[in-house]
Length: 81
Image (cartoon, rainbow, N blue to C red):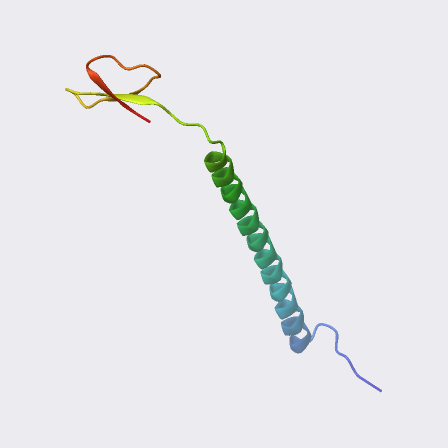
């Protein structure tokens, strides 16, 4: 015959530890999912940005060194791409 005292100090300690473990595990899983989602978005963004193959053309003013995005440069600018 086993005696079990409901509401004993040992019972409360065990349940409290179990709840804390479950909460900690849930938080760890959520943090892991958030990390994986962020890593996926960063990887996808880098792949889209580098895989487009588009070239941006621009011109740098020879005097002020100001850069502007354009397809044609004036005589006072130097072309860059």
